[in-house]
Length: 475
Ligand SMILES: [Zn+2]
Image 1: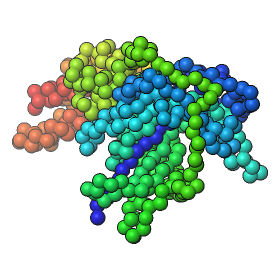
Image 2: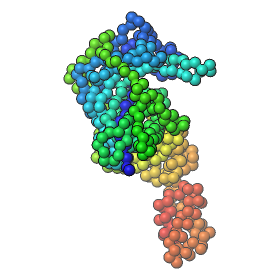
Image 3: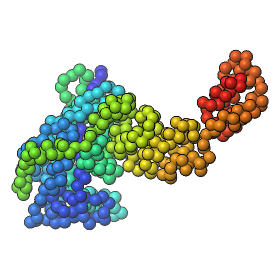
Image 4: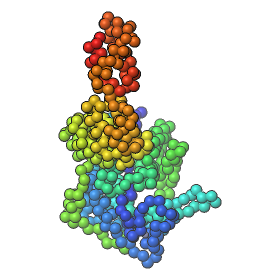
């Protein structure tokens, strides 16, 4: 039987505010344990929370950028549960009136283009962090993260494969970065995914029983966990069993997911309106002001590249996936007079390859965009060959130096002097009489050998177009 996988995602993103959601403590990452807390975020009796205005602004921004409608009236609620990382024994979140509802995103892939619905975006506070790996086997808790503001973005169950889920999650990340709502540093846990997944026979309308996999913090973990859980559920059904509704835990090291708790053990959160905070009331003017301040979003930017510069849709999609990369690309196109596709080839080829090797993003490029434009001009005017330009580029990537200086230092300027080249080519022909004879007898590929010998003789510095021209003349 053929099965279909049905996936919904809940994405938690830490907001880029300077201070926490209900107090003035810093949100910066990496401070000493329990050095960034106060009586409010530690939940001491008698303290009162005050909502950080910037949190609401960021949530509205995220909602507008994902086509949500913004609720003029929303409120905060207590979600009650007991766990040592939660000092108040409740989390302040939003239950039935979130800030944003009913949005969507477009994703594009091998399957074409598809719309993924967004059910809601709500604001809440993060919990502390438990540290289990202590020498004496005890558990410690660090409350620095407690009270850091989050938005939770809940999707509709619209995705049907790990690829679709990855594209959707990547799109969310791109949008949060463009709008400055979150820094999305995944290695610091700024972006985390929960997966809701069920399988059903293809063609069936009825949803299967779903499981939830919590706290995935990389795209690779997301893809692996989805594929693994989908296979597991199909195996259960094929063997005549039933999928149990439960929460599961993904382990990156063993590449397996295991049961964490079943539905029977699920929490009853006893939500009720947070009595220490007033509801959030937003007027139209406020919402429109934020809408006007939104930057050019990736889809619109990508469309502009296709329409204005004739870039293939694929290139435009890859480049605009990172805002820093898009800015770099545009600066380079504007500084270079040639075809934007040439810039795109270099950006998607050499530049992204070297950045990937370093595991770095476009914000870490060590040279200004205009240097790449300068290098492309040197190729266009014949000063350097295409292959020499790659060497210059690699050096420029490392040192951040100007291409002109590097061409000289590396001795890579191309020989475009016709007289000098004619002399070298004549010598090559003298040394290889057989190839010359072959060519004259009609074996055209002998030409390639002679070009190769000339390039070897000039250590790759001869202008290939000129070599071909002179060779043909002499032959
Ligand atoms: Zn605090």
